[in-house]
Structures are given as C-alpha cells and as structure tokens.
Image (cartoon, rainbow, N blue to C red):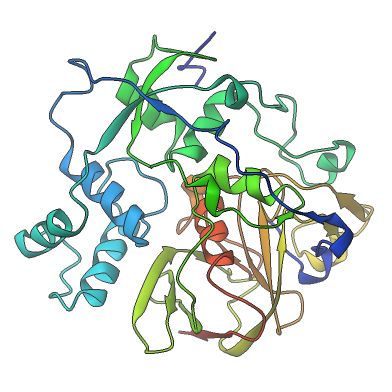
Length: 349
C-alpha cells in the first residue's frame, strides 16, 4: 500500500461527441461501492462545522468546490446560493437559521469511514502524465496520476484534506480503511445507456445519474458561480466557476447549449491560445479527468466557448481560464446530467 502523505485551455471545436456506435446498454454494477466500516475514535472526533456544512451543501447541489473545511469565498458563495434557494437571509455565513435549515434537510454525519474497493484501487493510473497540454497527446488516457488523487475526486475533496482526516502515516490501497467526507455512493441501478465509459465516470465521481432538469443556466461573473434554474425559475443548484481572464474575458450575453460531450477527445490548437507559441503543433488528446476539459464539454453557441471540467479542482474560483467556464469534474458531470441542447446559458457581469 501507498502512504497517503505522498498524498486550462479550451476550444469548443475540439471536444468530440460520441457517435451512436459508442453507446451500449449499461449493466448496473456495485464494483465501485465503498463499504462503510463502523466508526472508531478517530471517526468519532467532533466534526469541523464548516466541513459538515460543505458536505450537506454538496449533497443538496450547492457546491463549495472542494470539501476541505476552509471558510473560503467558494464556501460563502455556496451558503448564499443555498440561502437564496431556501428564502433565507443571504448572509453568506453559517448562521443559526442556515444551520437549522441544513440540519432539518440533510442531517448526515460529516465523514464516513470506508474500505477502498479493489476495483477502484487498481486504477488504471498514469503517474507520469505531464502537466503540459501538448505533451499529453502521447498518452492513450489522461487518467488520475495516483490512487490518492482518484480518492480525492471521488469524495469531492483534496489529497491534503485526506491527510488531515487520516494522518500522514495512513496507507491507501485495496482493502485499506480511511476517513473521507460523507459523499455517498450513487445508486448504480439508475445508470442508463453508456456513452464512452460515462457510467464508470459517474460512479468514480459519485455523481447520481438522475438529476433535476435545468431550464436555464446563469453564469454570474460578480459572484463567481454558475446557477441552474428549473422551468418555474427555482434555483436548483449552484457551482463555483472559473470564468475567463484579462486576455480572454467572459463573453457577456445570452447563448445556448448546443450539446454535451461526455469523456470527450480534445483537439488542441495552439493558435487559439494567447499564452502558447504558434510554433507548437496541433494535437488530438484522448479523454480523461486530467485532460484540458476534464470529463465533460458542454458546447455553447458562442464559438470556441464551453462549460467543462478540470484536473485542478482546488483552483476553481481562483485561477484564470481561456474564457471558458471551468467547474470541478464532479460539478461539471452533475450539470451535464441536468441540461440538454437548447437550454439557454446567460452570462452576466
């Protein structure tokens, strides 16, 4: 087993939708389920209230990005989104009214103590995957670099948080027992047709296949979030987002979703990126959670723009993008299950 302590760019024309031939009926599977193990003294320790709130918000669709117990701008935005949806005072704080609402709606423990299944622990992993986009073209799959990284994405957290919950000497591997944020397994019986391995992606990211339908999406630059509303204009979900930069500002306006590419290939064209030399050669990158657009590309009517995932979830809301809207892989996957072609996407200042 391994010690736990060892513990960008976008272009809408490059993400390829799966042809019908790539689809097949799914067989429900429980191979990626994490068995809950009875709690011990370590798991029984008093939970951090912020971590507990982040877990409950995440389950309800109001993501703070990574679940890490930090009172970040993303956490405060998640609270405001939840407060807006529940008609509470929008304080952006974990005030008594908000705590009471969360307790009444989703009173679950902050952490789980789980056993790592062998099917999850075997990967495959790509430890030598480079960060440079052009060099990733040499790899057949842009997967996780390590089991620790995969576990962090599965439980919507960071490797550092796993270390904090388990101690630097904890081991990871098949059959190992670790403490994780309380992100539940999905009901595999709800999986439908498989598209380019999408069912496994949903299981690996713990994203339920059945989600409420969004009638419109609003990207709010001032708040740094993407919101999904239903046909009755009720706020269904909110995700922190990275959106544009001084070189590639967010294209304010009204657009539409053209389609959704799950586990897409990516055509890398250096000429479309201001920070890449035009002497670099175009390349076709294979799918994977550590690719330039993560596990999903949601194509927009604005050419070369989309909503997508990322291999660097801790940077959401803090790093810059090349104009596109970047979410964590798990939030992007969840949004992909909520929208379809034709849904309006409004980008506001």
